[in-house]
Image (cartoon, rainbow, N blue to C red):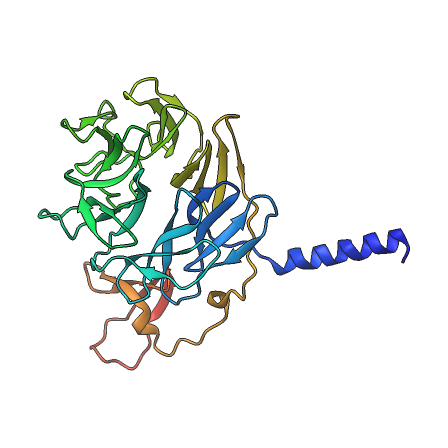
Length: 345
C-alpha cells in the first residue's frame, strides 16, 4: 500500500475514533503519577495523561464519587451507593469488585488522606456526639477504626513528621461566593500533642482542601472573590496565589508530586506547581450517554420539585426537570374546565 494511502487511512481511523468520543461533565478528580480518576455519568473513570484515553471503572446505577488513590497507586478509595446510603469502598486501580469498608449510614462520608502506616483517614458524623463531622483513621484490612480527637474535622493531610493539617467544618452547601458565615472552612495544624492552631484565621472567608508539596501547603480560597489555588508555608505565612480564575470556582483539588488536578466548570484542569502553568485536560468519553436519550414523561406533575403561589393567588411558579414555568389561570371556581395559560419564567 502506498505511503500516502496508508497515512490517509490512519487519519480517517483516528478521526472516527475521536468522533466516537464525546465531552462529558467531570467532577471530583484524583491524581497519581499519570493517572487521573474522576466522576462522570455517576461512575468512576480512569484517564491516562500520556495516551489521553479514558476508561470506565464502575457501572452501578448509584453514584460513585470522591475518589482517593492509595500512596502506592494500587488501590482506589471512593464513596459509593451500592447498598443505597453512601459508604466508603475500595477497589483495585485496574478495576474489580468493590469492597465495602464502612457501615456508618452517613451521607457526608468521604476519604480524605492516608497516614504513614497505611491507614485511610475519612470523614464521618457517625461517631461525633455533636451534629458535625469528625476524621477517623481506618485500617482497610481489619476494618478497625480510631477517631481523631478533633472537633468538626472534615479534610486534611499529614506531613512526614505526622503533623496533621486539617479543615474544620465541611462545605456548608449554599454555593454562596465569598461566604463568611459561622460555618466557614479554615485550615488548622495539629501535632497530636498540643492544641490545634489556626493557620488561615486572618481571613474571614473560605480556606479549604490542604495539600502538601515542597514544604508548602496548597489550598483553595476565595480571597480574590473566586475560589482559586493558593499556598502558604507550614506556619501559615508567605501567602501566594497560583491560579487566577474569574467567575468559575476551582473545586475538588488533588495533588501528586507537584501536579494538581481540579474541577473548573465542567472540565478538569492540571496545574504544574514547579512551572506555575495550568491546562485543561481534553478528556473524552466512550459511552452510550444513556442520560441524553429522549424519554416519555408519563406523569409531569411527579417531576415538579418546587412550587410557589403568588400573593393574589392568580399565578403559580413551578420548577420541573430543571425548567421554570409560570402558570396563570382566569378567575373561576376551582375545577374549571379551561386550561391555565403557560408562561416561561
